[in-house]
Image 1 (cartoon, one colour):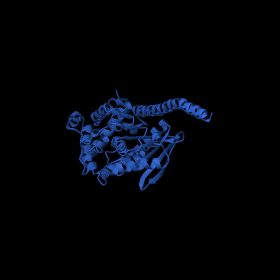
Image 2 (tube, rainbow, N blue to C red):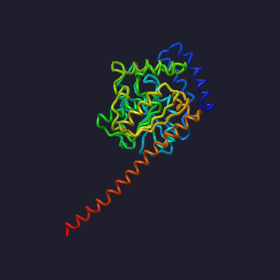
Image 3 (cartoon, rainbow, N blue to C red):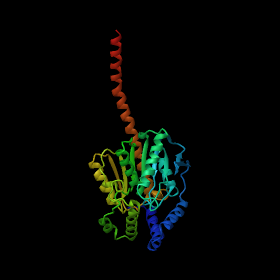
Amino acid sequence: MPSPQHLLLKQFLTASTMPLARRRPSIAAMRLSLELGSLGQFMPWGVHFDSLQIEGLAAEWIRPEIADSRRVLLYLHGGGYVLGSLNTHRSMVGALAQRCGMQALAIDYRKAPEHPFPAALEDALLAYRWLLGQGYAAHNIIVAGDSAGGGLMLALLLALRDQHLPLPAAGIGLSPWTDLVLPTSTIRRVADEEIQLVEALAIRGWGGLYAGDVPLTSPLVSPVRARLHELPPLLLQTSDAEVLYDDVLAFAAKATKAGVPVTLQSFSGLVHWWHLFWRYVPEAREALDKVACFTTGIWAAQQAAAQVLKTVRRPAEKLSSDARLRARL
């Protein structure tokens, strides 16, 4: 059962967003509302951020005081491809980076309807290539995102694979949006709860704004429609009370069948974007802690593989050395 803090959060979100939703506000009004709502979100103690530009793309480094400087969390924020910014997600990304002991690079990718697909994906590719150009090894990069940012994370992995670029160590999707079609069965499932129905109908419209002239079934728009072979390990988190729940389960099943190592973590009764409220909701802190455990496991697996490789190489090097010695004799 969700915590009392989460129940209060849900009541607050229903009371504050439903009147606005019924008036069908413009995207500009929703963006402003979300920006104002983020003013109460503060960076965790001991985490600092610095703004930068990557070939005209607004971004920022989020650096915990104790972080491994070799490793980077490339973060892609959510917001249905039309909302969200560095401001709206800075606090949560800071909390996540701190728990993972990594520095994070967050980007403010271009959004629909002004910039439909493939603008956001191009910006994500730009940021990833920039990290490689700065000397960060692909195996020391993890890409993460929430909601639409989680879908963009998956699209980025698919694009990197298809362009034969080095893949990151892992991908993390916090309630990722994997299917912009949003099947009618999903609408029926959430119809009993007004806030979920409004949310579902809204993102259904945003999906079309993002896709533009590209079909919603395009693999880089709806990653669940893609061939999912040869992807790095994935962590997917979702709640059974979210509109996107069915899609996340479908993607996890398809990716697992394709041989992708998938860790699926399902929560009960939590609203979409519960991660953003990590200061107030214990389930959000629990979810971020589980992400940190996943990243720790990724690095541990890398170290174990490197140790095995060393063990294999040593006998081979000794044999080669002995052969050279015999040749001299």
